Structure formats: C-alpha cells, structure tokens
Length: 584
Ligand code: OXD
Ligand code: MN
Image 1 (cartoon, rainbow, N blue to C red):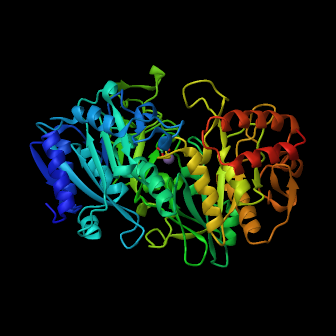
Image 2: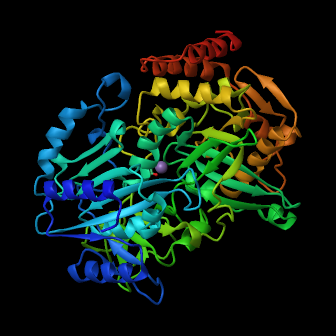
C-alpha cells in the first residue's frame, strides 16, 4: 500500500466490488518483473522465449475472439449525449456505472488484483499525468512496465494529490458479448472488462493518453493527438521536429523510424524517433508548439516488420519484448508474415495449433504485436525524456490515396490545415476486412480516439491555432499514388525523407511553392529525386491535381462533414472555399 489516501480509498472500493483474493501493489522493480514473469510462465499465461537469442523476451496468445480493439464496444460515458457527439458510442454515465458495475461484481474472485501506478510522460515533466490501473492480468502488468513509467516512480510523482486517472480492468470471462471499454471523462475514470487484448486493456495508451487526455486537453488548453514525433538532423547538427497523423496501415511506425537514403546518410542526415503513436502538444514559453510522447514503449504491429521495411523496429524488439499472437518457432524464437524469407517449416501458430506453410493460413495474426521499450530503439531521440518535449516545425496529415492526393502539399494557413486534417482520407487495403479501395475518412486519425464531440474537437484545433504565436505549418502527404498498372509510383520508406526535407524547407522559408486550389505544391525541381528510379516527368505527375477526381473528392467531403453535429463555421467556409477554387 502507498500512502496516498485517495488512491487507497479507491482501491479499497474497487476491491470490495471485484473481490480479489489478494492485492499486489506494483513497485516497478526488477525483482517484481522476475517474480511476475516466473509466475506467468508457471501458469502458462506467458511462454519464455529462447533467452540466448531473445533475452528477456516473452510470448503470449490472446483468445481467438480477443485480438483487436473493439470500437463497437467502446463508449464515452458522459451525462449528456452531445458531449460524446454523433461519431462516438455513448452511454449515459449513471446507467453505464450501474450496467457494467454488475459485471465487475466478484469478477476477481480467486484472482489477484494488481495495482499499477504509472506516469504518462517523462517523470521529470510538470505536464505528465498519473494513472493507476487495477487489473487481474499479469500480462497487463508486464506490458504496462514497458509502455509507461511504472511503479513507485509514479506514486512519488503523484504525492498526496487526488489527480490521477482511475482505470479498472478485469478479464472476467473474456466474453465478447459482455466486453466493454468505457470512458468517463467527467470522472477521470476508465473501465475495461472481458478483454485481455492490448489496445483494450493497456489503459494508459488509447484510453488514457488519447480519449481521456483529449478531453483534458480541451479543458486545459492543450492537445492529445494520434501522432508520431520524429526529429530530422541536418549535416550541421541542427534538428527539427515533425509530428504526423495517419490512419492505420499507412506506415506510421515506419516513418517514425525512417532510415535516410544512402546518399543522405553520407551527407550526415539522421532521423531520430521521439514517438510512434501518440503526441501530447502544448504551447511553449517561446510561443511554439511542443510535443511529448507520453509513452515509454512501442506496441507495434509485427507482420510486415522486416529488416527492409523497418530495421530499427526489428532491432528494438530483440530483447525485453513481449510478443503477442505472433508465430512461435520450434527453437522458441518468433516469426511473422513479412519478417523475412525464412518461413519456418514447422511452428505453432497464433491460435496455438501446429502450423506448416502448406496449410495456406497465416502463422501470425495480422494484428499480432510486439511490446518493446522505446529506449532500445537504435534511433531513439536524446530528447525522449526531455520534460518539455520537442518544438514542432510541421504537422503532417496523410492517407493512402491511389489517385486523388498529390505526393505532398502545404495548407494555406492553420485554419485551412485544420480543414485538411478534418477531411483526411485513406483507401482501405486488402489487409483489413471489407471492400478494398473504399475511401474512409478519419479526421486527424482521431475518429476512434477522441473522447468528446468531434465538432468541439475541430473547434479546439481552430482555437489552439489562434493561441499559438508561432504555430507549426500543416501539410498533407500521400506516399501511395499508383500508376495505370496499380503499382506504387513513389518509392516510399527511407525516400520519404526527400519529401520531409521539402516540408522543412518550407517551414524555414527556404523553398518556393506553386499555389493550387488545394494548397501549396512543391515546384518539382525542389524535391530531390537523384538516386531514385523516378524521373522528372513522373515526379510532375505525382504533384499533379486531377480536376475530375477532386470534383468527386469534394462531393465525398460534403457527405463526410454532414456527419458532425457541431461543425465549426470555419470548416464549412473552408469547404466552400475549396469548391470555389476548384471552379465547382
Ligand atoms: C494502434 C492503433 O494500435 O492505432 O496504435 O490501432
Ligand atoms: Mn495508433
């Protein structure tokens, strides 16, 4: 037990509700990690991997019905429906406590309740925030150890304050019919029950650092965003920072850990990773916007991660990593589709079944994950623990568009940038279920993660723009345009640095641009294509805007914007402005 009376009282209440056999207060020590690992391995909850090859690494499988976030069962529970807005699932607060409270009754009988104090943000930062997660899962404790600054450090940070986010997680029967991920932003509370899958149960991540934090940001004048943060170091040693928001399957983790093309490496360019998923943004004393990654680890999608696509991610997870739902090889190492060509001849698949390649089924679940400490990333930024974070020069939005969006463009100003983010779109891929090539709009990649009404969220963006004396410039990128044969035109991966350098040149007043109806486009000669297989004419094509596609695009944008009940007038005006500039 710690000596914060608010924490103790609440833990007592939740224990009375869930009735665990015992309560273990986590301190974050190495001894604790060893003890819990031993216990989880002895019960079969976790499997110890080959310690010669993957020291400190563990393996875990979740149930087949519990392999991803469940947006349909994720709710914002406020007193008034309009505070959640039409794009969130809503449950009336008192009703939610009563309904789901029943499911928690006695849910931890025969089990241990772990009390996990954790900090989101560096322990040295006045902007960081404390959460306490109560859980009956050792898997959750060991993951939270990696994903957050966890244990005594968090209680020291909290002191005797009542300001902490209360998270209650119980596996219960892992029953999908009674699975609920509830957020009570008015009460700083998160309830998660009947799941044991990461995104639903590592409550510091999406639940706190995005949904609850976005609400706190609205009240307190800052922003919690679904963004990576990276630094680009120029040969003279100067480093500038960019944040970027993309929907899933657009390579966010890859961009965050980008390796510069050889030519740029030789010149002395480096890319530094501050975060791969979440950014907390505040106005600094210098009038710029500053970004902190509240997390301490990466919860990355494994399939597709290879020495080609993202060597830094692969190198990060060679030690002290938890692998979930990947393929377990006979030598107790791991494998997944897209890792390399060394397909195992025999293995155990993510469901725990014998697997051979001829079965024609996936060995790793498409959403299988690695949980790895960020500090192990070869390109982790030395500002990772900086209490003030890093100053942001540019905000980048993007998506996967076969035709419409050019390789890159800059918004005219902040307000137009908010419109670009609000209409952000991506086409579905074969990786997800459902039709391929369907345009999905996911404003700022926050639709599933905003803890309040999206109309108020857009307004908050607009208001922040007015408050930031020296705001970042806002851009949109699209690495995914295809040619007539359906092949990607732009090489992507490390070569994306060439586009980021144009973005920084714009921020620094070092590059001209061409004004177009949709924003400022690069002059083709300002994007360096030397050393790629792109020729100048192809690059011009990548930067072109097709009027007919844009006529379709604005129609689709109109339908999208109609979904929000509190759309700020500025967004409507931006939409009308775009239509007019396109001559529509
Ligand atoms: C994630 C997500 O897992 O955005 O980061 O779904
Ligand atoms: Mn994410």
